[in-house]
Amino acid sequence: MPKDADPRDCSIADTLGLVGERWSLLAIRELSYGVRRFDQIVRNTGASRDILTSRLRKLEANGVIRRERYSDHPARYEYRLTPAGLELCDVLLVLMAWGDRHLHAGDPPVRWQHSCGETVNPLVICRHCGNEARRGAHSPTGRGARTA
Image (cartoon, rainbow, N blue to C red; front, side, top):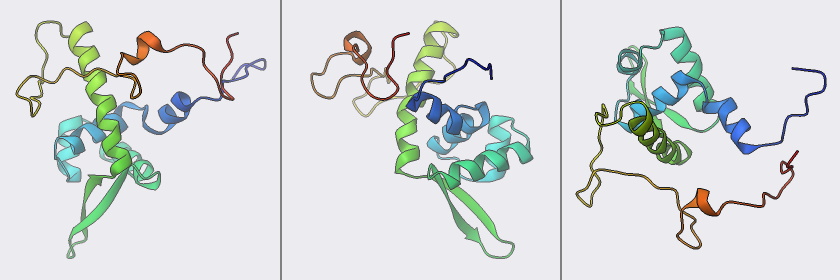
């Protein structure tokens, strides 16, 4: 880090420190698809076993996933999202929509159907007024807010 660096105190940076690495997000994706077993997560993500083990341990230690034993002899576990992990599924849907628009325009590799019957098209809105969040976001406050 440069000597004159003064990193902004920021929940985005802190969150990326936990889940911002490719294999962590892909493991969360697999869990959101209902894939629970280690070997299946390895196969579907392409992660090496040692890297995936490291990422899953970090996610478990930080309350994003939990392990549940499904076999005693030998001891085997499957993984499940915690409530905090389930919240990250919304983030993945928004990332997927961005990729569908900017990387796979016209031919997205995966589409999700919503319970309303339509294809999921996520939109982040302000809980208070119902308007799009990014269009009305201004005037940051808090310990990490600085404009220069």
